[in-house]
Length: 195
Image (cartoon, rainbow, N blue to C red):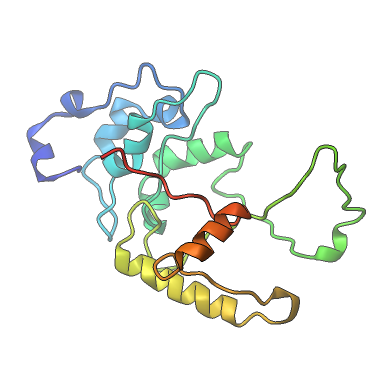
Protein backbone atom coordinates (compact mmCIF):
# COMPACT_ATOMS: atom_id res chain seq x y z
CA UNK A 1 0.00 0.00 0.00
CA UNK A 2 1.32 3.46 -0.91
CA UNK A 3 0.50 4.88 2.52
CA UNK A 4 -1.74 4.11 5.47
CA UNK A 5 -4.64 6.11 4.02
CA UNK A 6 -4.74 4.04 0.84
CA UNK A 7 -7.10 1.55 2.53
CA UNK A 8 -9.77 4.27 2.32
CA UNK A 9 -9.78 3.93 -1.48
CA UNK A 10 -10.93 1.02 -3.60
CA UNK A 11 -8.71 -0.29 -6.37
CA UNK A 12 -10.93 1.32 -9.03
CA UNK A 13 -10.27 4.73 -7.47
CA UNK A 14 -6.53 4.15 -6.95
CA UNK A 15 -5.46 2.33 -10.14
CA UNK A 16 -3.36 4.62 -12.36
CA UNK A 17 -4.60 5.76 -15.76
CA UNK A 18 -2.16 4.12 -18.17
CA UNK A 19 -4.06 4.62 -21.43
CA UNK A 20 -1.42 6.88 -23.04
CA UNK A 21 1.62 5.02 -21.73
CA UNK A 22 4.18 3.19 -23.84
CA UNK A 23 6.06 1.09 -21.33
CA UNK A 24 6.15 -2.57 -20.38
CA UNK A 25 4.57 -1.92 -16.98
CA UNK A 26 1.47 -0.37 -18.56
CA UNK A 27 1.24 -3.30 -20.95
CA UNK A 28 1.40 -5.93 -18.19
CA UNK A 29 -0.29 -4.36 -15.17
CA UNK A 30 -4.02 -4.98 -14.90
CA UNK A 31 -6.46 -3.66 -12.35
CA UNK A 32 -6.89 -7.21 -11.03
CA UNK A 33 -3.15 -7.66 -10.61
CA UNK A 34 -2.83 -4.28 -8.90
CA UNK A 35 -5.64 -5.20 -6.51
CA UNK A 36 -3.89 -8.49 -5.65
CA UNK A 37 -0.51 -6.81 -5.01
CA UNK A 38 -1.37 -3.38 -3.61
CA UNK A 39 -1.39 -4.30 0.09
CA UNK A 40 1.87 -6.28 -0.01
CA UNK A 41 5.26 -4.92 0.98
CA UNK A 42 8.74 -6.37 1.19
CA UNK A 43 10.65 -6.69 4.44
CA UNK A 44 12.18 -3.25 3.73
CA UNK A 45 8.77 -1.69 3.06
CA UNK A 46 8.86 -1.50 -0.76
CA UNK A 47 5.53 -1.92 -2.52
CA UNK A 48 3.89 -1.94 -5.94
CA UNK A 49 3.06 1.76 -5.85
CA UNK A 50 6.74 2.63 -5.36
CA UNK A 51 7.68 0.11 -8.07
CA UNK A 52 5.36 1.52 -10.75
CA UNK A 53 5.56 5.23 -9.94
CA UNK A 54 8.42 5.90 -12.38
CA UNK A 55 6.34 4.35 -15.17
CA UNK A 56 3.23 6.27 -14.13
CA UNK A 57 5.14 9.58 -14.07
CA UNK A 58 7.05 8.86 -17.30
CA UNK A 59 4.67 7.39 -19.86
CA UNK A 60 7.44 6.71 -22.36
CA UNK A 61 7.88 7.79 -25.95
CA UNK A 62 5.80 6.63 -28.93
CA UNK A 63 8.92 5.18 -30.58
CA UNK A 64 10.85 3.99 -27.52
CA UNK A 65 9.24 1.51 -25.15
CA UNK A 66 10.57 1.98 -21.63
CA UNK A 67 10.41 -0.50 -18.75
CA UNK A 68 8.27 1.61 -16.42
CA UNK A 69 9.01 -0.24 -13.18
CA UNK A 70 11.84 -0.41 -10.64
CA UNK A 71 12.76 -2.87 -7.90
CA UNK A 72 13.49 -1.61 -4.42
CA UNK A 73 15.22 -4.72 -3.09
CA UNK A 74 15.76 -8.33 -4.07
CA UNK A 75 12.46 -9.39 -2.45
CA UNK A 76 10.62 -7.16 -4.94
CA UNK A 77 11.24 -9.68 -7.72
CA UNK A 78 9.54 -12.47 -5.77
CA UNK A 79 6.73 -10.46 -4.23
CA UNK A 80 5.82 -8.73 -7.51
CA UNK A 81 6.66 -11.69 -9.76
CA UNK A 82 3.26 -11.46 -11.47
CA UNK A 83 4.33 -8.02 -12.72
CA UNK A 84 8.11 -8.36 -13.03
CA UNK A 85 8.40 -11.79 -14.70
CA UNK A 86 6.47 -10.91 -17.89
CA UNK A 87 8.21 -7.53 -18.09
CA UNK A 88 11.67 -9.12 -17.78
CA UNK A 89 10.72 -11.77 -20.33
CA UNK A 90 9.49 -9.16 -22.83
CA UNK A 91 12.39 -6.74 -22.26
CA UNK A 92 15.11 -9.39 -22.37
CA UNK A 93 14.03 -11.48 -25.32
CA UNK A 94 12.29 -14.39 -23.65
CA UNK A 95 14.33 -14.60 -20.42
CA UNK A 96 12.10 -16.68 -18.14
CA UNK A 97 12.16 -17.05 -14.33
CA UNK A 98 13.55 -20.57 -14.80
CA UNK A 99 16.49 -19.30 -16.90
CA UNK A 100 19.89 -18.62 -15.38
CA UNK A 101 22.28 -15.87 -16.41
CA UNK A 102 25.47 -17.10 -18.06
CA UNK A 103 28.60 -15.16 -17.17
CA UNK A 104 31.77 -15.62 -19.18
CA UNK A 105 34.62 -13.33 -18.15
CA UNK A 106 37.30 -15.20 -20.10
CA UNK A 107 39.07 -12.38 -21.93
CA UNK A 108 41.00 -14.83 -24.11
CA UNK A 109 37.80 -15.51 -26.06
CA UNK A 110 37.77 -11.96 -27.40
CA UNK A 111 39.56 -12.18 -30.74
CA UNK A 112 40.37 -9.45 -33.25
CA UNK A 113 38.68 -6.79 -31.14
CA UNK A 114 39.54 -3.94 -33.48
CA UNK A 115 36.86 -1.36 -34.07
CA UNK A 116 36.57 0.83 -37.15
CA UNK A 117 37.80 4.19 -35.85
CA UNK A 118 35.51 5.97 -38.32
CA UNK A 119 32.60 4.79 -36.19
CA UNK A 120 33.95 3.98 -32.74
CA UNK A 121 35.80 6.74 -30.90
CA UNK A 122 35.57 5.26 -27.43
CA UNK A 123 33.77 2.62 -25.47
CA UNK A 124 32.79 2.12 -21.84
CA UNK A 125 32.02 -0.74 -19.56
CA UNK A 126 28.98 -0.20 -17.38
CA UNK A 127 28.55 -2.08 -14.17
CA UNK A 128 25.69 -2.44 -11.78
CA UNK A 129 25.69 -3.45 -8.18
CA UNK A 130 23.66 -5.66 -5.95
CA UNK A 131 24.71 -6.30 -2.39
CA UNK A 132 22.59 -8.75 -0.46
CA UNK A 133 20.87 -7.01 2.43
CA UNK A 134 21.16 -3.54 0.86
CA UNK A 135 18.17 -2.04 -0.92
CA UNK A 136 18.49 -1.08 -4.57
CA UNK A 137 18.95 2.62 -5.50
CA UNK A 138 15.25 3.53 -5.86
CA UNK A 139 14.67 2.54 -2.21
CA UNK A 140 17.99 2.66 -0.35
CA UNK A 141 18.85 5.04 2.44
CA UNK A 142 21.83 7.39 2.66
CA UNK A 143 23.37 4.98 5.16
CA UNK A 144 23.01 2.11 2.71
CA UNK A 145 24.58 4.22 -0.06
CA UNK A 146 27.54 4.95 2.21
CA UNK A 147 27.86 1.23 3.00
CA UNK A 148 27.87 0.39 -0.72
CA UNK A 149 30.57 3.01 -1.28
CA UNK A 150 32.68 1.57 1.57
CA UNK A 151 32.41 -1.98 0.18
CA UNK A 152 33.17 -0.80 -3.38
CA UNK A 153 36.19 1.26 -2.26
CA UNK A 154 37.59 -1.70 -0.32
CA UNK A 155 37.23 -3.91 -3.40
CA UNK A 156 38.78 -1.31 -5.70
CA UNK A 157 41.66 -0.69 -3.28
CA UNK A 158 42.53 -4.39 -3.49
CA UNK A 159 43.27 -4.11 -7.22
CA UNK A 160 46.88 -3.83 -8.31
CA UNK A 161 49.01 -3.52 -11.41
CA UNK A 162 47.18 -2.34 -14.52
CA UNK A 163 43.88 -2.42 -12.62
CA UNK A 164 44.97 -0.07 -9.84
CA UNK A 165 43.54 3.41 -9.89
CA UNK A 166 42.34 6.33 -7.85
CA UNK A 167 38.88 6.56 -6.34
CA UNK A 168 37.20 9.96 -6.21
CA UNK A 169 34.44 10.34 -3.65
CA UNK A 170 31.68 12.69 -4.76
CA UNK A 171 31.46 14.07 -1.22
CA UNK A 172 35.14 14.95 -0.87
CA UNK A 173 36.20 15.56 -4.48
CA UNK A 174 37.80 18.93 -5.15
CA UNK A 175 36.19 21.28 -7.67
CA UNK A 176 39.31 20.97 -9.84
CA UNK A 177 39.14 17.15 -9.87
CA UNK A 178 35.43 17.32 -10.64
CA UNK A 179 35.94 19.67 -13.61
CA UNK A 180 38.82 17.57 -14.94
CA UNK A 181 36.83 14.32 -14.71
CA UNK A 182 33.83 15.95 -16.43
CA UNK A 183 36.11 17.27 -19.21
CA UNK A 184 37.54 13.75 -19.67
CA UNK A 185 34.01 12.26 -19.76
CA UNK A 186 34.63 10.14 -16.65
CA UNK A 187 32.03 12.05 -14.62
CA UNK A 188 28.70 13.50 -15.67
CA UNK A 189 27.94 17.05 -14.72
CA UNK A 190 25.46 17.25 -11.84
CA UNK A 191 21.92 18.19 -12.84
CA UNK A 192 20.93 21.65 -11.74
CA UNK A 193 17.64 21.96 -9.88
CA UNK A 194 15.28 24.60 -11.32
CA UNK A 195 14.37 25.70 -7.79
